[in-house]
Each structure stands twice: as structure tokens, then as C-alpha cells.
Length: 155
Image 1 (cartoon, helix red, strand yellow):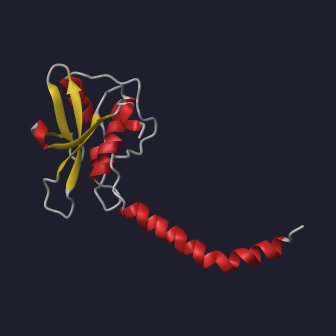
Image 2 (cartoon, helix red, strand yellow):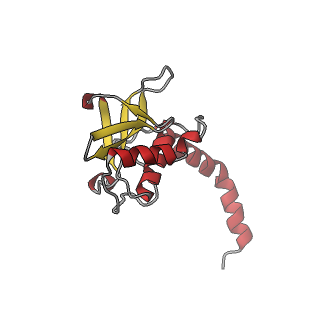
Image 3 (cartoon, one colour):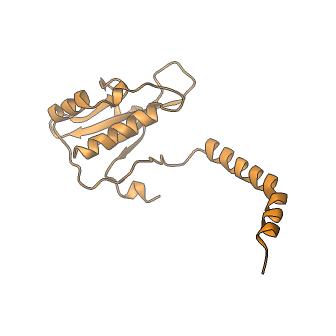
């Protein structure tokens, strides 16, 4: 029978190697760009969502409180978009995560906004940081993923 002290002693020898391996894996994960956006939202894809008319979407955007949060290095456009999409889904509203060229003068190349497909108005885009309409052409969209798109969530 192996004594616990011997096991701890053996692990102590490899502690630096284990630490460096975990550190390198963490760095790799931070700087690796996924080929698809990996939205970290509980419950995706959402099944019980549907397109709402523009009045209902505007009401939702006015009533949600995500835009009251502060932008920071740890809470950015991605988080604003994802949290707004999650809240919309909880209200039964179908929405999409949208990536566009960054319109702001900062170091980021892309920017995340959200979209709703309104039967009475077509696809409407919103900036979740301040709840304003975003006017853009479909050709400005670099990536778009609907919250109920089951195929997009399989990869």
C-alpha cells in the first residue's frame, strides 16, 4: 500500500511542471480565436422564442436594464450583447448575436450588437450598450447567429 506522504512528495517534484502546463494552456485559450462564436449563455439554443413585432422589441429594449451596466475590460460589447439576448429569450423574444466592423475608435477590430427579426419591420439592429437602433446594411454583417439556431450550437 502506497503511503499518502509518498504521493504528496512525488507530486511536489512535478508542481512546477504542472503549473507551467496549466499556465501555457490558459494563455493558448486566451489568444485562440474560435472559428465560430462560442456564446456562453445558459440554455442555448433557446426553443421557446419567436419573432415579435417592432413595438414589442422596442418595449423590451426600453425595459431591460442591461444598458445600465458599465463597460469595462471584463464586461464589453460581447457581454452586453449576450446578456441582452439571454434576457430577450427569457421574455420569449427571438434575437441574434451580430458581429460588425468596430465603429468606435479603440483597439478592437470587431463589435457585437444584436438583431431582432420583426414580422412588421424586417430585421432591426440594436446597440445593447445604450438601447439605440443601429442602421446598417446586411453587407456590414461579419457574423450573425440566431439564438434558436440549433445547427450553429452543435459545433
